[in-house]
Length: 262
Image (cartoon, rainbow, N blue to C red; front, side, top):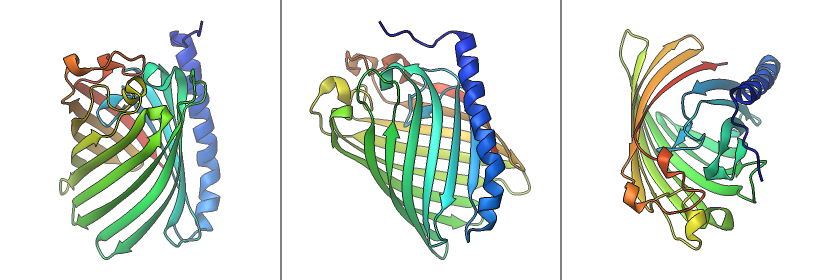
């Protein structure tokens, strides 16, 4: 029988361990950044629930995420690594942490940004092989305090997700002039073909669905504080009876988050 790392003390130790590792990386970044045409970055964020595309990846509980991006040669190529605490989420087979590794390319044409890349989602410690690969691309446009982005993500047919998965979404950000506040709105749709109903419920607990997000951020130097409302149109009656569906964490949620950008 697998033992869940659900005791408050165990979670605190895991958060402390991840946080210490991220701060160590932060200390090493500036020297590397100065030697690159583009700047390396590190961000650390603590949120009341790690929601991805409207559904929880952290068992509806507090999650700590750190992300580091390093440019490669200043030609638009970069690599990104991200690690987040998942609290033994059933969606990912009881994995305590999730790790994302990505390689991407971005090109700017005036105010327009085009980008594409590949991301591997890894779940060490899960009860079976649940890691999967995802391809993506998008375009963004900036005009004054307004930023608009459209993007698509496609995970080819893989046993870890019970078929394939396609996500298309859009997000808008608008900074309120002469204030430290930014308004955020986003919407997306998840769809795909099903080969294994139980596994497909990981990313689509009730089949194809829509998700949306409304939020506000307050930015002061490297400190970012945000509140988000996230929701989906997933019906309780449509949720698949699967150990990976985690249907209780697929409804509306008000989130709070605080982060640091280096």
